[in-house]
Image 1: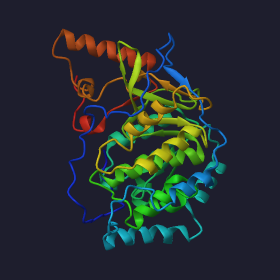
Image 2 (image 1 turned 90 degrees about the horizontal axis):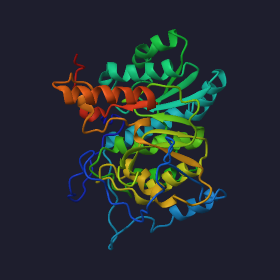
Image 3 (image 1 turned 60 degrees about the vertical axis):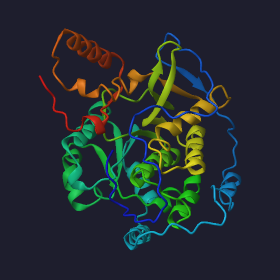
Image 4 (image 1 turned 90 degrees about the vertical axis):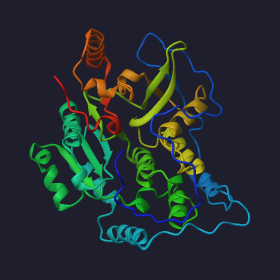
Length: 377
């Protein structure tokens, strides 16, 4: 997970339990129901939209009620942001008033590019944190999808030095743009807008988990909801063209006995603009945000929502099995880089690489576990 460089937050909050470490035991999903067994194809199951005619304004009004979040009595004082944080928020507003808003910049980019597919990435760290691995991810997008457009939402990369780092891709004729995130503009007219306003005014506790991580979780959902396309994390190597994928999310793990998914992940998302499942994801984020639980607003969120809408009519999306995007679990990812020490490891590596070659569209490298591992012979 990358560190966040846009906000510096200094809040006086009550002591909380430590955030959940990455990839430990799954969170209990309330209301989970058994899902259909895997068919002989690679598709696990499909579900449909709950209500395609939802009125966004009506639902936003619910979010604006004073009792939107749990508030103890007497009423708590708002969380106070540091001057640095307030200054950062003001800089966002200043950028937006110069005529180059986030939306206008993206519209111009898409209009001037012959995009066959739109990819989105976010980079929430400093420029010096960008490594060869992230550059390899960018290269893999265009190698597998040469006619694609790539939008990298990042403050540090949307700079003269950042543009210099990415210039080789532009010189090769690839459609690439970096844009600083204007959250006020991006989140407008969604559940995310009211959540973000409450965050800025101190009426939401950002918690102990990195705010950057949680903003990235929300940002990817809103970007796809407003523009449609593919979102990938910066530690996902793309292996094949995504042109035949539409409205899909990947399972991270599955129950071998029941042949049902046990955990979904949000590192790869492929959805049409205004897809109702994205609407549900954004709504869930705003209504159930918890900044003290790792994964609650990310992988666990998409798992909760999909678990609830399974078998409801109208959603029309597909869950792909783990080999599609997550062929190697986080607990074994280091084995993909290391040379085998015995016959068992050699056989596992051979079979895994063959599976990836045949079945995987991409490989999530689980950067937190593998970023310091070197490839061995």
